[in-house]
Structures are given as C-alpha cells and as structure tokens.
Image (cartoon, rainbow, N blue to C red):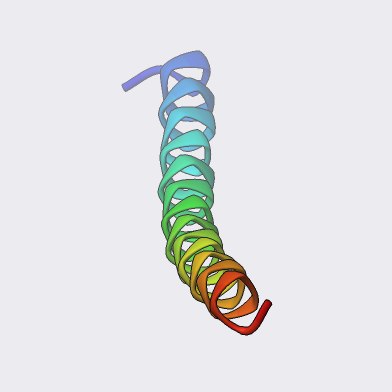
Length: 51
C-alpha cells in the first residue's frame, strides 16, 4: 500500500468514527427531545383540565 493510500485510509477511518459518534449523539438528543415533547404535552393537558 502506498503512502498516499495509507493516509487516505486513515482519514476515511477517522471520518467514519466521527460520523458514528455524531449519529450516536443525534440519537441521544432525539430521545431527549421526544421526552421533552411528551412532558410538554402532558403539562398542556393538565393545564387545560385545571382551568
């Protein structure tokens, strides 16, 4: 494998790792936002019933 190919493989491997880390972070944020949305909906329903 040439030096250029090795560098390319290293860079692509790093990009892959960063993409996986970003996807994991996005999944975590998505779950948190979903929970926040559910809590807000419950709070809105409770507020509507107490009026």
